[in-house]
Length: 357
Image (cartoon, rainbow, N blue to C red):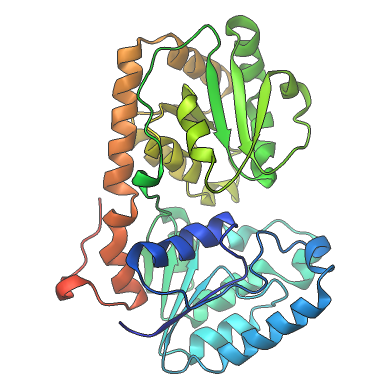
């Protein structure tokens, strides 16, 4: 197998690094040659400031690896260091025999902040895209932006392994309907976008919302209908399957349009009916998975009522469609040959990769 070195600034517990790097290597049995900086799920200033010696060691090791990639394929997911201005990523990708840059968020539209001004994700993204031999974008919106900087851009969505999920089997709804939301603390803010319809259904139908997250912050007025479950890598699947349906609200902004609809993919792998904001990649996934798309508060309320009131047989149909769509269009198996070919790893029997529609 072609030698390849993988770089990410996060460890396996971080969602993007896990999905875009670690799970691909595990799925393909492609080794574990990954530089993950401190190997943590967070690189916030408060987190890394407590580990100055480890940071110095990580920076030194990163530069040593950067000097040794000349004959290898180098794959960078998002960025190699949280303290980068784009220089180290550019050096790695330009020195490599085959430089691959992968991203799954609208980094080119990272909101302004004091940290962004010093260690700019926008600058890292631009330099990395320009230095790579090939760019992998998580969706069409991201690919369009990268295509303005580079002619060789391939769309490979974030993928799931359906067999890692517990597929829902029963679709009768009890007297207490249950929605589920799965995500990181930083994205819990999107729940406030649909607080009004959620609370309306809580009052009229007793709807409860299970929030699976590593966070514990108050969700303000939603607290009275929320049941929090701490996210763990080997425990969230059971909680997904217990819900009646999954939700994925988003704002319609330049940043959120770059999201890869990963929550919806996880709901689909769990054979859950789903509803999400009609934004970006959500739209495509919802169409393929027989989900409901909503743009306004009224549409959210109508959609939630539909999922609660429709016959169990209809919810079961949605569930079968959602899981089948994820297997066909968003599983690691569906995209394995394309990923291998793009990264520069050999495909089985040398067969040319074909891409899911």
